Image (tube, rainbow over the protein chains, first blue to last red):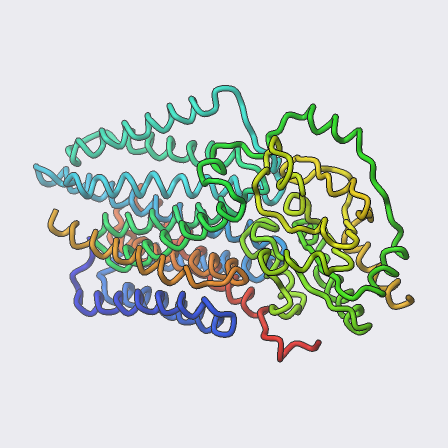
Amino acid sequence: MTGTVGSVWLDLAYLITGVLFILGLRFLSSPATARLGNRIAAAGMLIGLLSTLVGTGIVSWWIVVVGIVLGTVIGLISALRVKMTAMPQMVALFNGAGGGAAALVSTAEFLFRLQGATFSRGVVLPYDQGLTIVLSAIIGSISFAGSIIAFLKLQEVMTGRPVTYAGQQIINGLIALTTVALAAFIVALRGAPEPLWPFFALLAGALVLGVLFVLPIGGADMPVIISLLNSFTGLAVALTGLALGNNVLIISGALVGASGTLLTILMSRAMNRSLFNVLFGAFGAVSSEGAAAAGAAQNIRTATVDDVATMLAYAHQVVVVPGYGMAVAQAQHSVKKLADELEKRGVSVKYAIHPVAGRMPGHMNVLLAEANVPYPALYDMDDINPEFPQTDVALVIGANDVTNPAARSVASSPIYGMPILDVDKAGNVVVLKRSMRSGFAGIDNPLYEMPNTMMLFGDAKASVDDLVTAVKAA
Amino acid sequence: MQHLLAELTVFVLALFVGFEVISKVPTTLHTPLMSATNAIHGIVLVGALLVAGAAFPPLGAVFSIVAVTLATINVVGGFAVTERMLQMFKPRSTVKK
C-alpha cells in the first residue's frame, strides 16, 4: 500500500525524519537544549508528513483535510488550555489517541486486503503481515482503552483506588485467551474471503482487556502505567509500520517503545517493586479494617500557622517535600513565594523530589518549574536523604506515601522496601494536609505520630499563603 | 518473508537506539521526555494518511477519517504540550533569586 510515486525520495525523507527524531530525543536529555530537541523532533514530523502528502498518490483528499483540520483544532486547543496540574491525564489522552489511530490504521489495512481478496484468488494476507496487523490492532486497542481509564482515574471521574472483583485474574485470562485465539484464526485464514466479525470481536476483546488491565491499578501507580501505555502505543505504531512496510513508523515506534519501557522499569525500580507487582498486585487494595483500626489509635500534634512560620523563619535549612497534594491545590506558586521569603532571611531552601511523587514521572519538577523554581534547587532522593539530619524543618506539602517510614521498618506494610525520603530524620517535620485521610495507597503513615512531627490541616495553597504572611511578620 | 526480516532488523536496531538515547535523560526531564516521545508516536499519522489515500467506501472511509483525526490530535497536542512544559524550565541565571 505504500505508494510507489517518488518512492526513493519518500524513503529518503523518512530517513531524515527518523534521524531528526533521534537527535531530538538526544537534545531532550539536557535541560538547556530540551526545547531545541522538541523542535527538532517536530521538524522531523513535519518533513515526514509533508513528504507523505506530496509523495504518495492520495485519492481521498477530503478525508485527509477533514481529519487534519479536526485533529489540529482539538489537539491545539486542549494542549494550550490544559492546566499544568492536569498534565498527566492530558498526556494519557494524547497517548490513547495515538494507540487508537494505530489500531484503526491496521483495521483499514485489513479491510483493504480483504477487498483485494474478492478480486484475486489466492493468498492476499501472508502469515507475517497478518500477524503484524492483528498484533498492532490488539496492542493499539489496549493502549487506547487503557489510556481512557487512566484519564478517568486521574481526572477523578472514577475512583483512583484499585478496582478489584472476585476471579479478576481468571476473567482477564479468559478474555486474553479468546483474543489470542481470534488472532490465530484470522492469521491462519490468510485473507481468504472471510466474515468480518472475527476481526471486530478481536478489537472488542482488546478494548475490554485495556479497560480491565488499568482498572485494578491504584492512583499512586499511575506514573508507571502512563509510561507503560506510552511504550505500548510505540510498539503498536512499529507493528503498524511492519504491516504497511513503512520504515519511518518502524523506527519511530521502536524508539518510543524502547524509551517508554526503560522509563517504566526505572520507575518500578524507584518504588522497589517489579513491574509485575505494579500490574497485578492491586497495590493499595489493603483491607479497610486494618486502616480503620490504625486510624483510631492516631496520636497527633496539630500546629498553628504562627508556630510553623516562626520555626521556618529561624531555621538554617528547610527542605520542601512536595507531593500530589501540592498539585491538586495548585500551591506551587505560593510555595515559591514562601521559599523567596525564607531565602530573603538567609534560610537555605531545597526541594526533595521523590522519583514517583505526583501522578507522572517528573510531575513535581514540571510544577515547580512553572512557578520559576530554578532546577538546581531540586534534589533527587539519593542526593537529599543524607541532608535530612542537618535539616531544621522538613515541610511536607501534600506528599504522603513517599515519606512513610513504614516502608523502612514495617515488613507487613504494602509499601515495605520502597525507598522513601527520610523526612523523619529532620529536626522538625511539618505536614501540610487536607485531612487525616490516608494517601492514594490507602496506608497509614506513622510519620504523623512521631514526636517531632506537627500537622497543619487545611488546603495546601491557603496554608502556604498564610505561612508567607506570617513569615513576613516574624 | 525476506522483506519482513529487513524490516525486523530496522526495528531491533531502533529499539537499541531508543534505550541508548533515553538512558541519559535526568529525572527532571522525564515528563517532557515522555510527552515528546508521546508526540513522536503520532507519526502513525503517516500510516493513517496512507490508508486514507487508498480509502474505499464506506467502512474504510469512516475508519480512515477517525484514524487521521486521532493521529493529528496526538501529533499537534503532543508537541504543543511539550513545548509548554519546556518553556518553564529555565536555567538559574535567568531566574531571579
